[in-house]
Length: 326
Image (cartoon, rainbow, N blue to C red):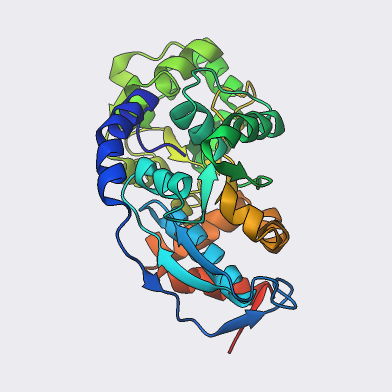
């Protein structure tokens, strides 16, 4: 999911490009985990390869970057860990330039932020294909996407979902007309003003929500307030956030497909993939296993339970049988 609006991200890109070109990516650390092949990496097809993985700085990205490094290592590669790069543009430029070889990126970010498009493509596969084709000339190859879609959504607690009779956002729109006082919404300041946030959502669904029933607050507080229904009946959430599961929030279906698709997919420096084509086969089963339920669980172990993201990634890969320890 995007952490800044497309215009803001574009400005950040312009500011960072000279710095990135001039100094490159800071050094990372060798990944020292003792891991070997499970169902992934049999025969160690990446033996002899030296690969660098990267990620953005938020929990989900660090987990995904750690997964990349661990499966590469299980498949025989020597791996440098350069996860936790601040901002989308820094990690993206590392893969483009070859300072890093691989990261998980989101199709919506690629389409809107990096390729400069303003209209998202609602169909997930068509969105991925458009990004894959559009990015070929930038030295970045997009491998097949997962169904892990880190986008915006509206959520409600179970009691209010039953009481208000809502299953999707169209139901909320209908409720805003039949019982306007019931539609109170907790949102972050950015979501409240973005066209792919509340203004666009209310327009797409024909909702009219007076300013008095829109409560602006920090993103973290939105989850607790929506769960308790103290400040609002509905709240803006990110669909892969671990607090959804931890607080038993119910995500409402975006039945008009308003929110862009932000499906996670491996992005590989093209020359690296040409040199080590086995990367695609190594990553295919991992990507196929990623979905919103997995992301919510693993993100929650870090953001709610306080576990280390690298260890969370490794535990899950071992539990799934993808890799083995020792």
